[in-house]
Image (cartoon, rainbow, N blue to C red; front, top):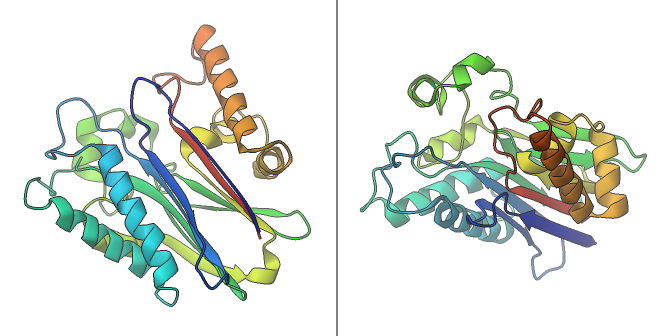
Length: 263
């Protein structure tokens, strides 16, 4: 087994809000990966004394432990347990009912000698590569399918869409959101390698249109996860310098994280 993990902050003056880990049990049988993309709150506070990096570190640490130590517990249940544990850590001091309480998108994957399980919540991406080279994306498209004009208003998003039926879901303070995640599994023999990516890394394909998921995975496996992030940064700089035709009002550079595992 070979693993590679690269995570780069979008702005070096700000903490990286992503979290990523790979867990390998002492038995040597199987493993798990965790990727969280913290949601940057708008100015004005979120009812919480803690930062997004504090939240993603807490939630990510809990998920790393639970996905390895409880191999028979479904990933959605592990996510619910981790959210509850994290919420308990700051419930006494913070308003966890605030729509912008610290939160994150989630990718989980866990493999054993027989199966590869997965969970995706919101706009991070998991790619599964078969022995014949076929790459299958596992995605939660609910946010992407919402009308863009609705997403321009923080008030509309927070009041009617964020963690609401008909909108989209993130891991925040409610363990029940874990049941909204995209989950599934495939036989281990059908997966040669897998990669988890935050949306700052998937910009290469989704925003800048440099290739499809197979071509993106080829870059990661053939030239390294760092190369993918470097190419994203170059594309972001070029677009920002020429009028932001693709970036628009989005961040010039977003936190970008890639985890690749060769099984």
